[in-house]
Image (cartoon, rainbow, N blue to C red):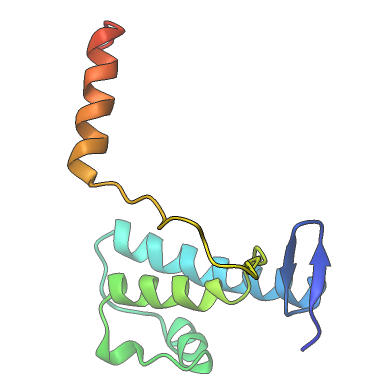
Length: 116
């Protein structure tokens, strides 16, 4: 697989193949979402065959689980952001935030601004 760069982003797949695979997976995802919205649990034989061709086992999964599996398959075709590695060590540890502190801060700001 050759890496194809697009500005800051890249993909290990050629652009045409990447887009084609994403379109196919989007079509499968749309079919599964329609079944889920219509509260149907029975897959068509064609959809079963397509899912099996992607290495999935539709008879052992719910529609929701199949949707999540398709999302996982899509991830490898998404554009990646290259990670820059620092050569020297950080001078200080990275900042971490507790979720409660962030939420409390946001609520306080919204109250000050009169939006809450």
